[in-house]
Image 1: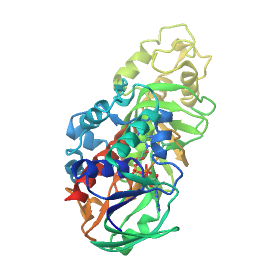
Image 2: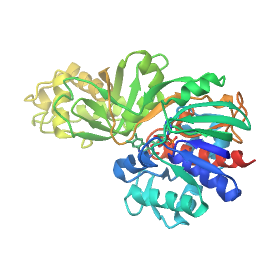
Image 3: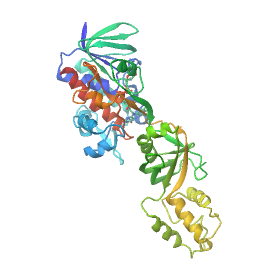
Image 4: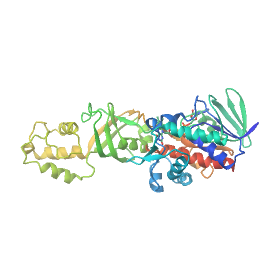
Length: 403
Ligand SMILES: Cc1cc2nc3c(=O)[nH]c(=O)nc-3n(C[C@H](O)[C@H](O)[C@H](O)COP(=O)(O)OP(=O)(O)OC[C@H]3O[C@@H](n4cnc5c(N)ncnc54)[C@H](O)[C@@H]3O)c2cc1C
């Protein structure tokens, strides 16, 4: 038997591609091979078991801006299958979605299993064959006559789609096909940091901060900020980790970051607010003029600024007020390593989009070889963007396979 297409990897991208191909061409003989005991393992664990399926956003510029590695070529892929198409796709198949305040979209059931049941139900309905516990060891050959090797048997296929996710064996096969892969490095991680302003304050958060990484080039991000056991996390940190992933890797995750804890106020406003209390007889530690900063963090910031906790506002000297303003507006934190973000983790790197025909996801180096999902050099920030890339590139690849 020569399969019309063999898809390697039963993740979001591989399954979605198979479904699209079968929907367009019911007689298309497609086989999906998965090394794990079950398909869609990452969907199962994603978003803390809830699966952040996509992001509520129909503005293409905003969407593209959420992918540190993507750019205009990704635009061609995403326009074929936008987040609202994802919403329609699942809702019309009995998986209603809901949007959270920050734009993340989840199944209303709050269970990633609803997403899995839907995808596998569709696979069954369309007659997509998925074989699990079949690890592919090599893919070679050329269009019309590929050999897909597994521990069990050698399969033959006219076309192959590689959808093996980040950092996999497929990198070797793709290199043999002539691709120059971008080196895999992690994206979406937390920062280790032991600055006295934050040590021991795990669990405290600030609603909005602006972070500026003092690297060449520099990077900035804004958003919620969370203090953890080992350092800092939260959307502002994760976004920065994604955009600066490569630079930070080169620096072995050591860099200085400036933290503006009051980005909605400029320095003069902050200074005038602290000066406004200079007639007060209250202690600086108990009278905090910035309700956005939690009490225990405020007390630490006073210490870092060299202002004694028991001092009274009216006794503060001019230089203390200036130092406090500086600490609040540009606290310098030294990043000393990378932590893990358990809810979502992606690999940056893989097949560069310029080596792919983005209208079909077919390799420009090896006709008949298609690539989709995280194996591409595309990755998004947290919020459902990584699955959106998997759905969209899988959808385009599914169409490409049957062309
Ligand atoms: C803990 C966690 C939580 C996440 N949460 C979210 C989230 O909520 N929202 C979001 O947008 N993104 C999330 N992500 C990212 C998202 O899961 C990935 O970007 C997405 O799964 C990529 O899809 P994919 O199909 O390209 O790859 P994968 O989902 O990784 O699927 C690839 C499949 O290929 C199989 N495979 C690999 N090599 C072989 C081989 N040689 N032979 C056979 N099979 C093989 C693998 O076993 C795997 O099943 C999360 C990631 C993690 C790790």
